[in-house]
Length: 174
Length: 112
Image 1: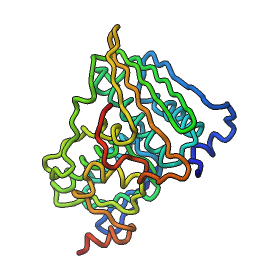
Image 2 (image 1 turned 45 degrees about the horizontal axis):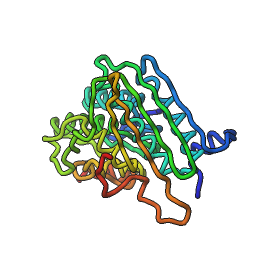
Image 3 (image 1 turned 135 degrees about the horizontal axis):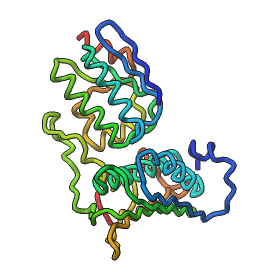
C-alpha cells in the first residue's frame, strides 16, 4: 500500500503498533486544530493508511472538533479531550467534551440538489463525518457532556479501493 | 496557506495553495471579500495547490458565490484536485458552480 504524505513527514516515528495518542485541552480553541491534525496524521501512518484514508480522517476529525467548538461552546472554546488509537487496519478517534448533550444522528444532511438561493452557510459537517468514516457513535456522559467515537477501517491490501477515501453510498450514524 | 491574486483584464484569478481548514478559511474568505469589495465580481479560484478542504471551505465558496452573482458576476473554479472535488460532489456544489480544467479555460469562460 502506498504511504501517505504524513508518513513521509513522520518517517522517524518508530513506535511499535498499536499506538495511542491524545490531547487534553482545558480550553480548546480553533488554534488547536494543527495539533489535532498532527495526531491524526501520525495515527494514519501507524495504521498503514494511504492519502485517501488520511484525507477522510482529517475531514472527520476537523468536522467534529469544529462542531463542538461552534455549537457546543458559546464563545468558541471549552474543554475537549481527544484520544486516537491506531491499529493495523483501523483508526479510532474519541472526542470527549463538556458541552450540552447532542446526538449527531438528529442532524439531517442538507439537500444536495438545493438551488443556490436556498442554500445556507453551514450544515454539512456531520454529513461529511458520516461519509468519511465507517461508524460514528454518540454516548451522553453521566457527568454531562458527550463522547463521540469515530472508527475508520483501512482498505486491506489487495481489496478494491474506495473512491477518494469517502463512503459514496453510506449515511448511517452508528 | 498562500494566496496570490492575478488580474486578467476583467477577471481576478485567486491562486490558493495549502489546506482550507478552520484555521485558514477565514483568510480565504477575507481575500474573496476584498476582491468583491474592490469591484472584482468575475472571479476564478485556482485550486491546483489545494489538497484538502473541510466544510468551512464550502462556506467561503457559498458566501462568495452569492455575493458575486448578486452583482452580476460569478465565482468559478479551476484545477480542482480529487479530494476537494469529492467534497464538492458530496455537498452538491458541482451543480451550482462551474468547474474548469485549467485557469485559461475558466478565464475565457467569462468572455462567452
